[in-house]
Image (cartoon, rainbow, N blue to C red; front, side):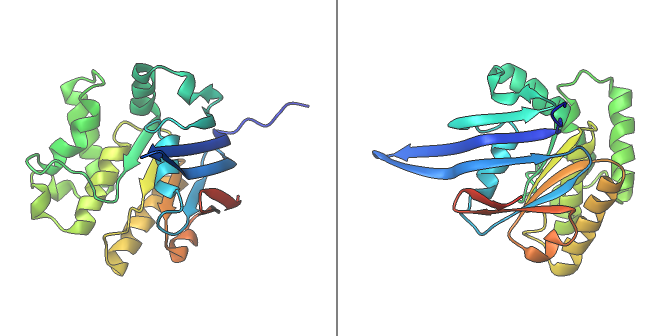
Length: 227
């Protein structure tokens, strides 16, 4: 009988930090899987290890122990250059603080992930226009980030994350800085992307947001409680 192959497998993953002779485990031991097309929330309070886990999933933070398998590829067996190539092809990141470049226009911010891909300029323009249309910001393409609202900035961040059509979208508290109504609009957009086949992993401390996802992985003190 063949073993089920999952899009992402986290196997005995842990992450320790050492400072001043003291070692702290941000992630003690994690084991779970995520399948293609799922919308999964990782829920826990501040300091539970959620953001550390998300960075490990995205190839940004080397775990102290354990394996991260994506399409059966052992992510941390790759060189740093290979992991960078992997991220540009496989992963879209949505950060809580948006991380938009303030002196670039909305459209220029969206085009940033394509700068290192070698995609022709004409195709970059078309792709950026397409995703801005999708997130409802086609009319704001020429504005700077400080000329649009917080909710619109988050939608720009989402457009930037999906412009390369990565199979996996990682969202770190994507509604953390937004009011309730705006947060609802952002989650609705994520749901639409998921219905179109996007695999989404969303970190949150808000149980209400978990109602919009297909499955919740609870994290407490660096350990998975439910998966």
